[in-house]
Length: 391
Ligand SMILES: [Cu+2]
Image (cartoon, rainbow, N blue to C red; front, side, top):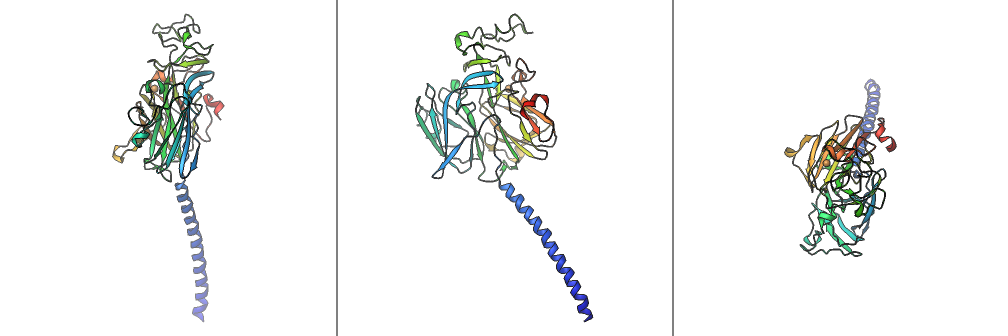
């Protein structure tokens, strides 16, 4: 009896302790499960200033629609260029897919010249490569439509662009980003990411008179009338750069033609916008941020991030082996290249990212900075004056 008297409370205590332990453990398991589920979620890629392409799934095939067409694009306040793009803008919408997706991309040509779309870096069947005359895909005639179809076999950052008269058509703006995500989860290039941002690099030669429709006949007048007489230190007229129109970053508000053949450029864009029209990228402290960079232009652009080192984890849609990954804060992106870089958001504030060729961040008439420049903005930190309208 004495033993029982002692044993019952002891058993009771043990039972309560066990239930308590299960409860605590159960909760932990629940958290772990929630965390695991979270990790299986895919982070939605964001291309600042550019939409992701809409699609519909038909018979298990993801179907996208691209319309190649003339676009009138505002690159920064009041500065419009008459470029070519897809679905109303340049770059065209970002195509987001998953590895294993069967995709169909219906391309309508609303230009007055033939065109095609090449899937840059993607391993596709030869006849889907979009290089008419070399393989069997057609030059898509004005008004015509062609459907490209392939299975996405890779994971990474790719691009798309015209491959008919590319010297002209790429420089008129016929390009866009193509992202292939893993089948599931947010582990990209071996890193679990919380943010997925893309920046496409382009450069433009805007010509014409700001007051008219930008027709070529006026190109010699451009800038001269605007900034009469004043001379810059290299002896050139301010606002002029020989026959090529306006100096870097010195294009006054107006609507202009793009001269795709020019070898001097005066507007340098991240996703078709120059600072301060670039939409800053939000991050939260502690997050792991993926940034995808792609270049369809005539020059290399050394892209530099302030306040952080990033790790270069992939090139041209191909993950780099651990031993080949490296830390840096500037990466030179050559034409045709894509890079994936990741960084830990561990330094709150607003940190700019920009091309480090000084002329490529030349300010517009009313700003000190311009061109290829954007910023990462930490959630909860004050917005600096340059971004007051972005809040
Ligand atoms: Cu540059």
